[in-house]
Amino acid sequence: MDTEGIKLFVLAAEKLNISAAGRELGLPPAVASARLAKLEKAVGADLLRRSTRKVALSTEGSEFLPFAKEILAQENAALAAMGFGNEHVSGTLRFTASSTFAQQYIVPLVPEFLEMYPGINLDLRLSDMELDLIQGSFDLALRDAVLPDSNLKARKLADDRRIFCASPGYLAKWGTPKHPDDLYSHQLVAFKSQATIALAGPKGEKEQLNLRSSQNRLIIDDGLSYKIATMEGAGIALHALWSVHRELSAETLVQVLQDYRMDAEPALWLVYPKSNVLTAKVRVFIDFLVDRIGANPLWQPTNVA
Image (cartoon, rainbow, N blue to C red):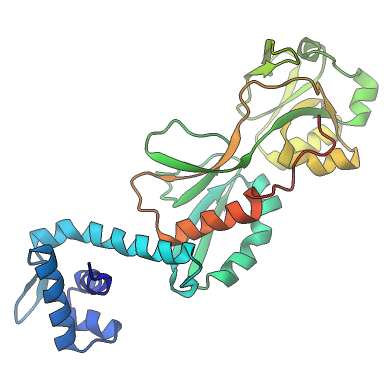
C-alpha cells in the first residue's frame, strides 16, 4: 500500500482540505487529488466526500483513519529502529518514572537523547509516588514490577535486586543480624508501601518478614530521603541495589543478611498502554534507555553477596 498516499489522506482528514494537505507534502492540487483517488481504489472505498465547498470524512474514511495512522507510526518506528530518519521522529513524549532512579540514571542521558532526536520533546513527570499511566495520559512509564493491569504492555529494562543494609554506626551500636527473625529486635526503616515480604534462605527455606512490626518506627515515601535516613543510622532498610551500590563501595552502607534474597526479585519495566500504538517516539526512547541503561547496568554486583 502506498504510504505516501496514506500520509496525504491523514493530513487531508486532519485539515479537511486536500489542497492544503498536498501543499504540506510539496504536491500540486492535481497530483494530490490523483494520489488520493489511487489510494481509494486500492482500499475499495471513498475515504473523503468532496464538494465544491468542503471536504468531509466518509464513514469508511473514519473507520480507516486510525489504521492509517498506525501504518505511518509503524513505518517511522521501523526506520528509527534501523537508524534512519531520526530527524523525522517527532512529537512530545510524556514519561513518568521514580524521581530517585531518574535523577541517577535517566536525566543525565536526556541531552544526548534530545540531540539524537531533534524532533522529540520530553515531558518528564518524576515522582517516587507512582502516577497513574492511563489517567495521566502518559506515553510511557518506568515501574519496578510488571503491573497486573491488562491495559499495559511492558519491556524489561534491567533486574532490580533488593538488599538489606545499614550504616556502620548503626551496626556498631545495635549489632549485625544473622537471621531475618533478628530484625524484630532492630530498628527498621520502610519505604512507603513495604509491608510483608517473602525471603528465600541459603538452603531454599522460605521466610516471611513483616516490615511493619513494632520496631518499624520510620516510613518514608521519598527514595533519596529513605537512603539518607539509612546512612544516618535510622535503622536497617531494604534498598534497591541501583540506589545504594555506590554507598556500598564507599562503605557508608553495609549489606546485612547476605544469605537471604527476596523470593521473587522485582525488575525494572518500561510500560505503556496496550491501546496505544507504539509510536516511533516511544519506540526510540525505549530502545535508547535499554541500550544506555539496561545493556550494562552500572549497579551490577561487585562487593555484594
